[in-house]
Amino acid sequence: MTNNDIFKKLRVAHKLRDDDIVNIMKLVDFRISKSELNALFRREDHPNYMECGDQILRNFLNALIIHLRGPMPKKGEQHKPKKKSND
Image 1 (cartoon, rainbow, N blue to C red):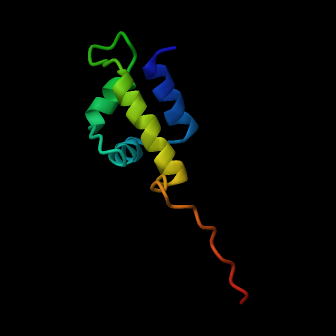
Image 2 (cartoon, helix red, strand yellow; image 1 turned 60 degrees about the vertical axis):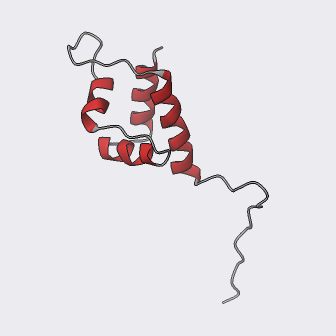
């Protein structure tokens, strides 16, 4: 299975559009255009096909984690549970 296949499957599983992926990638300061994304999702025999490198997939996975869970707390900070109001 190639990086392109993994990227495609994650895109479908999370129901992400191109705009969503571009915004998610911005969470890790990685810029990618819609045309570059389209090249990644094309079939291998298409003339505009682009291979998904390890760096692109790694950045997408890190950004997806931030998108789904939120940013990681800084060292020394503890996650504080929200207090319930007694209203």
